Amino acid sequence: MENAGRPLAEVVRARPRRGLARLRRGLRNAFSEGRSPILWIAAIAVGLAAGYGALGLRWAISGVQWAAFGHAGEALASAAGELPAVMLVGAPVIGGLIVSALLWLGARQRWLDETRAEGVADVMEARAIDGGRMRAAPGLLSALIAAVSLGSGASAGREGPAVHLGATLASLVTRPLGLPARAARIMLACGAAAAVSASFNAPVAGALFAFEVILGHYALRSIAPVAVSSVIGAILSRIHFGAQPAFPIPEIEPASLIDFAAMLPLGAAAAGLAIAFTLAVTTLPGWAAQRAHSWSIPLWALPPVGGLLVGLIALLAPEVLGVGYEATATALAGGYAIATLAGLIVMKFIATVITLSARFGGGVFSPSLYLGALLGALFGQIAVTAFGENSAGAAFYAVVGMGAVSGAALGAPLSTTLIVFELTASYEASIALLVAVSLATLITQAVTKGSIFHRQVERHGYDLTRGDARVILQTIRARDVMTPLSADDAAAEMDAPSLYEDDYLGRALGFFAAERLDGAPVRSRTGEQPIIGYLTKADAHAAYAAALQARHEEEHG
Image 1 (cartoon, rainbow, N blue to C red):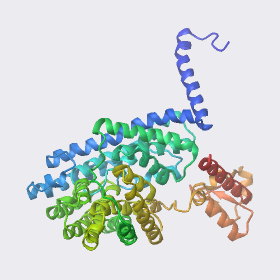
Image 2 (spheres, helix red, strand yellow):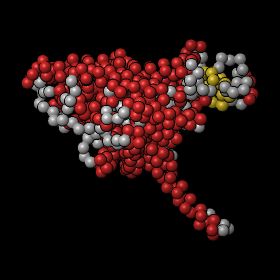
Image 3 (tube, rainbow, N blue to C red):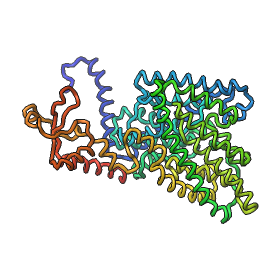
Image 4 (cartoon, helix red, strand yellow):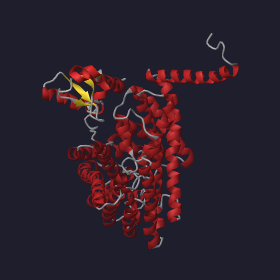
């Protein structure tokens, strides 16, 4: 017998371990076979973790904001307008000093490889490149940096950090199960969906965001788990914050044919703003990093400088501070004159670019909603003047502008349309937004060649805009598919043209084509770079075909 001759105490201790091992094997097999009920159970746990993660981030931002400005609500602009100038400028600077310390700690501990808080683009990269797995330390530290940044007045959004935290918690919660890559990617999307849903109290839009931005496909296997997590996120938001949306939406008047015709110029204007915003937030942070390196300034020292600049802008327009939902709601309600709207668009744009360039934590979702709402309100004021009673009013245009700019900049036109519909319950506004955001997205993508998130992922050399076929060529390495060689066989290949073990599959195939070879030895990068294996052209093509088939089954299963 298995336990014959073993002490009783040892047998008793071993039984729970064997039981846990059997349970883990069973769960892993169930996930690998893609059984929906098992995915749903995991999605419930992920929805709870990510939903409370998003709510916890919101509470943390409010706590820091109360400490910095003496006000914990969304109406930060109104409260900041009553504060002395030294407090308006000092809060972002002090917040910047704390963020600097956190960035220094992250760099020293090697938690943050690039001395910056991580965001949605890193979730997309983890899905495409790292098999849906994320490290806990960078995610938790990035959330803390975002809470300090936004609470102290940095001009950015909280939804991006919430998505990153939700995905991190999803990876952390499901890690003990040892999930295969395709199940881990679904769990990552579940975490993102719950975070967006909890942030906006919009479960349909949360699920669609996960499909549209994170997963990049709508496989039947993933629909139910993502929907479960998204609904749980919305339920948690309603339990703790009520059924009201993230910011109040005024009643939308019925639209006329003139209003629908005006969606074309509004879509073009939204594209112009989305293009400028996309290019600014994806290029200027890199430029600032280069300037800092040339002046021997460490990147972790930039936040206090950025905080000073944001604070000076806040002296003129406190509406730029923080997430900016109060200003967004005021624009939707028609509370700003044309000149004020134009000025706030410019100052919020500048403040957000400074915030992100200075290494503060935060996302681009809220700023894009802010800029779009103000642009739409500005357009609506002009339309009311031109069309009079035939116009649906400034609120209608503000809602459409909000969705058009954010959808085009973030590469999520369907998600933003659903957010608008869930916030307004206006069918006409949603139809008008589809027209405007479709045109805005078409123009924006033609110019920028990708969304803000795609361009941020490109910093690491990965192009996610062309689908998985290109990603596979950028992720499989020669060492993954080569045949190991003995010392005698390696000696016989010393003079042959060779690859290196970390060469990507795309380079290997290009090398074979350029040199007209059917195979090549593979060298190590270490020491004297000995030959450690051999890669044939046939094996490279076979690995590529197998990976393509696996991704196809995942996306259409």
